[in-house]
Amino acid sequence: MSLEASQLNELHWLMEMLHNIDVGLVVLDREYNIQIWNGFMENHSGLLPREVKDKNLFSLFEEIPQDWFVRKAESVFLLKNKAFTIWEQRPYVFKFQNYRPITGTADYMYQNTTFIPLMAANGKVSHLCLIVYDVTDSAVHKKDLEAANQELAILSQTDGLTKLFNRTHWERCLEAEFKRWTRSHNPSCLVMIDIDHFKNINDSYGHMVGDQVIRHLADVVRQQVRETDVSGRYGGEEFSILLSDTTLENAHIFAERMRKTVEASVVKYNDIDVKYTISIGIAQVTPGISTYEAWIECSDAALYQSKEGGRNRITLFPKQ
Ligand SMILES: Nc1nc2c(ncn2[C@@H]2O[C@H](COP(=O)(O)OP(=O)(O)OP(=O)(O)O)[C@@H](O)[C@H]2O)c(=O)[nH]1
Image 1 (cartoon, rainbow, N blue to C red):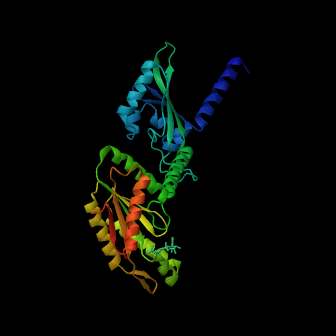
Image 2 (image 1 turned 180 degrees about the vertical axis):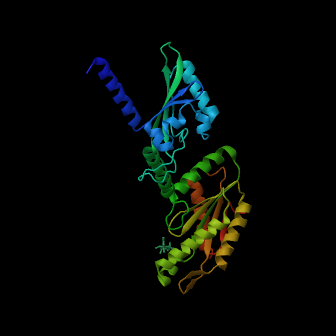
Image 3 (image 1 turned 120 degrees about the horizontal axis):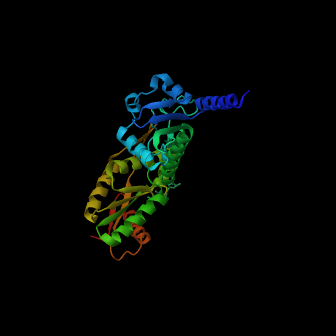
């Protein structure tokens, strides 16, 4: 075999390999007309190389935002530098269906694309090569991981029984609110709620019924609070609500509505009907309170007075 023939062979093999490689290869001329279109592009677009040859990229693929693409490509032509676009910035350049069985959750193929300047013999960049990588697997896994992390973050802040904030997260919110208050001094109130004689409910009807009562109170709290209020399950049958930008007088109105709602409710569990009441302590933060823990102590003390005073009542701090 002559040298020329073997070189031709190598060239032929190279072309064959490029045609069959598992990444997309596209060559565009200065007018964005397609010159080369390999097997990957053919398989995913359903268009043969001869069908796209000399056709304008933007008329064939209307989903490609022309302004964006041209801006990127022109800098490659002019500066003779490579450019990239990754799926996090733009999920894909070519809107190809995703056929992968493992990552079947994605409708379209996620792509990373590299723009490479192709220099002619005269040193001018007259053509541009696009290399399109299918990154659907890693994109879907990354998105799944992010969603799982987000779910975990929510779970770590939430009480399982009531779906209100758990104590740790609620206290973190309270600490932030206390810091905010030290700057703004807007009125802010802390409401502590405890179910009366809850032990009796557990002892008389069992823990399942007790849990149902706790869930009921959580629902009442959810119905009554505003979006900006922060409610949590502070302990077993103790709930805490932070009412920011709320005066003691308004917090009292809010708590009284809640107390009455509970008093009028019947919790049903199978054929058991349970009535219950709640005691409430409310503390408005004042300059005498130097830490958020001290604020909790004030509302706890007010709650204790409601218990001592006969239950099913509200005590305010400072006294009115
Ligand atoms: N069912 C159920 N019971 C709980 C849960 N957490 C705490 N408890 C119970 O709540 C009861 C609280 O009782 P106490 O602190 O003695 O208070 P109480 O009976 O509510 O009486 P007062 O608060 O003084 O009105 C205890 O029996 C705990 O076992 C829970 O998640 N589910």
